[in-house]
Amino acid sequence: MRNLHGAIRFAKKRVGRNEWNRMCQGLARTAIGVPPFGRSASVAWETCRDRGWGVAVDKDTVIPAGSIVYYSKTVRFDGHDPTVGHATFCVKSGTPRTAVVVSNDVGPNREVGAVHPEWFKQHWGMDVRGYIVRCPYGKLPIKDDAVVSMPVDAEDPEDDPGVRLSNLAPGSSGPDVAELQRALIDHGFEIPAGVTGNYKDQTIAAVMAAQVAQGLVGPDADGAVGRKTCLFLGLQVIEDEFQPKDMPLDLLTEALGIDTEDEVEFWEVVDEAARSSELESETARDE
Image (cartoon, rainbow, N blue to C red; front, top):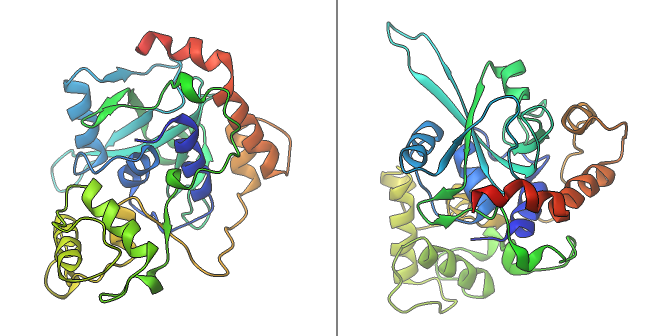
């Protein structure tokens, strides 16, 4: 599991990207670096809440950075009233009006963006249900004394592994294959030989198992890793010449209430909040 700064770095690097469409729980749990839990945002929230890991939220509740925040609304469909859920990762502590969360599908072209939790009530009709402080894999990185003084821009490649799909064809070898093998093993998909850096039969079988775990069948579960499976395993796909889209100004100003066209300033505010002693006092009650 990533520490607080590692999780925030991961989340902010996804801003402006649009490959996370309809994958809210996947984005939130991948930010903290854990395998899947809960087949949907609603199921994940209910499971964690029932185990005593969920905290209900009202308008004055402080939502801590490092937590996963859940939302819901009830819709009328074919005589039933199903509950639709959503999940986001909190990168700046605050109330539903002032906290900042990173979410998929909030940009004008459904990109990942940063907004405050009340945005979902205003735009999607979803109420904040609560946030979780633990998941089935352990305590979330809400407070980590070991990294409070760590510079937020420090390089730590293990916090954000990246692979190129062009290096991951069956039969290939190299460090990207080794990174894939580590991610497979970390997610419980067995490779008896361990991390070898060679994409051979055991790795193909492990990739097939990961594809099946996502619900892929037939030719879609062929053992050749693709973008969807990389995201499922928490791996960043590095693309040559890729330039993230600019973060829309209205989402920046709406999230933080600051008058700026500079995305760097936006993240400086977020990072400073994560480092501050105020964050420690806000989250101490959750320990």
